[in-house]
Image 1 (cartoon, one colour):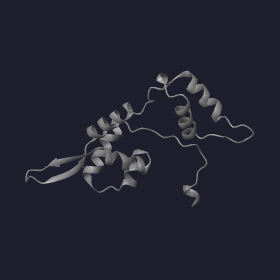
Image 2 (cartoon, one colour):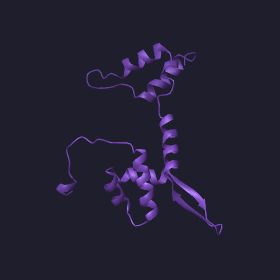
Image 3 (cartoon, one colour):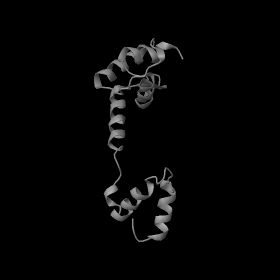
Image 4 (tube, helix red, strand yellow):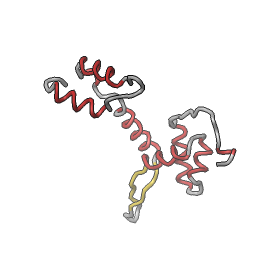
Length: 133
């Protein structure tokens, strides 16, 4: 690893703005930029550009009725918003309070050793308390 690629600073990940998506769409249409050059121009990671191009890729039909795929910023933003809407915690308040209390108690290591993994605790708790959620 070269010194130029080495960093001990904390990473600051950012989401793409609509303006950045528009610039990305123009660079993708131009066809002369690599993903690394696009990332450098936008000030984000190359993997962010790769994911965004994959996320916003839309199948188009030209005048000769041939299909081709093209990045469209609006499609990428829509898919991004849908993914963000689905990325929240799932109804943890519906689980029983005794289960959550027992889970936090069992997962705390005693003498440096934890006796249960989350999966094994959940399975044993389900067997002993079949009526609880």
